[in-house]
Length: 214
Ligand SMILES: [Fe+2]
Image (cartoon, rainbow, N blue to C red; front, side, top):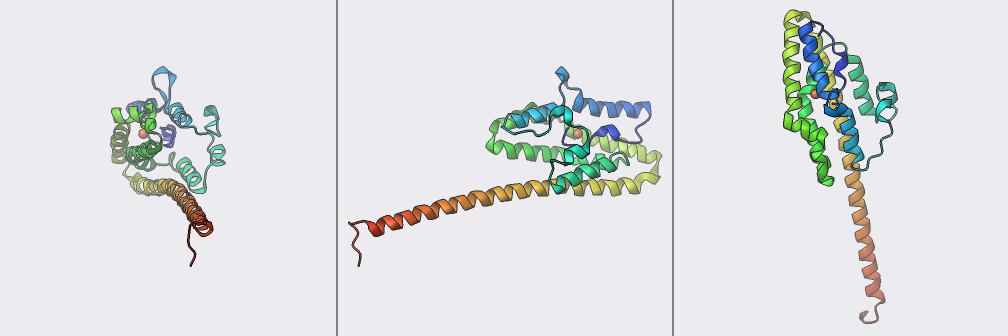
């Protein structure tokens, strides 16, 4: 999926059988019927709720370009993914294991304000076909096979998985902050509105000829 870092760079999957399994993951993202991809689907999902997309679809690719539009923590995630995805299979496992949870959280959060968004093909197809659950199982199975052959990779695989999970946590921290700021703004507006009404009522009462002033 587009919010996941790219599986294209995964190392050690170089036997024919492992290449086939990697290709299947890539097809799930980029080989959808009608020349569609998860990237295009997600872009349409955001366009349909009125988002402005600062980068055109085909301008995606360079993580440097992408980071110019991101907050610090999300940019850190992109940098870490770029660095770690080609180094070990741990980051891939971490991201695929967490994918279904955060995709659901994102879809459900958006659907509070845009009920249609949970039915966007990007979300609905993934949930119905259990795409991310399959990716998580596949990532773990393939990584176990590689580690059985090359146990010396275990430490780095686990270390990288942890770094990736922490970086992904940062993306959510940033989303949390956006929500908290929005809540504060709304509360502030309500309080200001309420104060204005109370002030007006108080003035009206004070100046009303029918009100007896002691
Ligand atoms: Fe995935």
